[in-house]
Image (cartoon, rainbow, N blue to C red; front, side, top):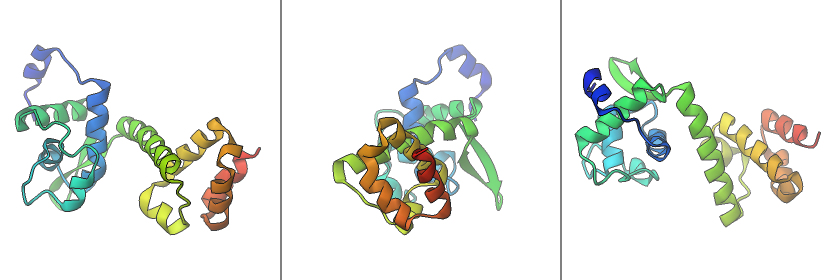
Length: 177
């Protein structure tokens, strides 16, 4: 990690946009990669160690103009500020969301999911939803739908209610209260 004195001398943090880019990149690296792999994703690396599915992440190549050292410094700042955290698994340091970063990512992912639904008119099945969107994010999606107006989303909600999990059905029923 970068020397704390170096970071303090720079006197700068990251912008909200930079934090969001790193957190989006974390979706690809989450629980299966460390700092260097996340930096490669953000740099748009063509290295063989960058998995094909990581290249589909919206943050892939977002920091193309930055050096690997600069990107690692940004990741370290996110670690220090508790947006992300490191957990050792089988002796390897893997990146995970810290609660602070997870809250931001849930908001970002829920908004992106709704936008995709508006553009494409998705009616996801339970299996598709569970493979695409975590429960906490799904709960936020439903809250955003309620804020926009339940009737605007009624066909989708009815479809999800018929095919959803018990938890999802409960959340949908709460929307009508």
